[in-house]
Amino acid sequence: MANSTAGKVWALDTAATLITGPVYISRMDWHPNAADNDLVVSDNLAHSIWTVRAVSTSANHESSGIETWENPDPGHPFNGFVLTTIDGGTLYVTIG
Image (tube, rainbow, N blue to C red; front, side, top):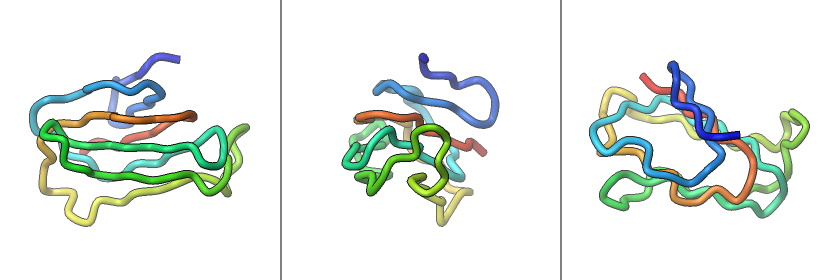
């Protein structure tokens, strides 16, 4: 699968710089393929937004292994969005 940034919910599985300007993120849900998978999301200036290591898998749509990040201030934009590291699985990013 390739990264999809169409619509309000992005589906990402490949490390890439996706936005270089302001972006509003309300939530991220990561469905890792295996325990110990790593995920790193940062802004365009390399400031960390979310860094997490999977405790368990959520492959095959298992809900127990989903890692979730909720923005405490969704009205404040981040300076870009870079998916720096994704060892496996899919990251769903809710914009807005």
